[in-house]
Image (cartoon, rainbow, N blue to C red; front, side, top):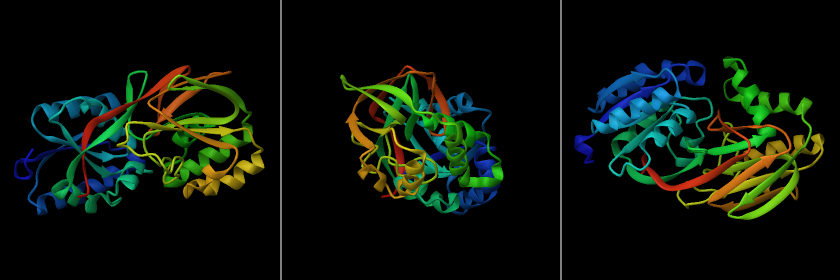
Length: 295
């Protein structure tokens, strides 16, 4: 839609980021008014409600805008996928804000308002797990336990919840046997985790899949094979730079469809939220939604 006719539907998760979105809302609304941008604000109850609000906004010709974390971003994107005229925006309001980090959107939500005004709608791929969409990285295994612990961590920890979750999970972890089929090619291994990455980063700046891109029509599949806990701890800081992929215990594959099984139950987490149970098939949906990104 033309820039001059855009009207924005601000969708706010008040609990996102331990209340960060709610705290940022008055300043964000003030910036929108200062720029002369037409908008209205809605608060969400849960992720299904996010999708309902996004569809309502798009049907009214508005641009749904997430003021929240990556879970809300993925829920809006999933609700809009396949709607050729729909466009969405992102104002970071969560703990990790990894989509914004990778996309070049300022992580200060007030500064990010500029992208709503001058940004360019660009097609972005989505991942899909058993019919549910995500925009970042879906992972399981050790990550399942680390994510569960991070989601239960005290809000005061901020982005440190991810390190808190990983260290807590490490204490009781035992390696699992995984079977991973990527575009029909089967791999079996024992180890830590499997991740299907539509984007580069998760967990507040951990570049798990440094070569992934959300506009290439494929998922980078990261296999973390068996190693000692001491080796895991030594490698963990390298994930923040993406240099861990040079380690011989890491293998990166690429494909449009990934099927994962394991020798015990695991929950698949994506964009920080539980999304499916194993066995699961994860797919890339190319160009599924248009997002306002920096010009």
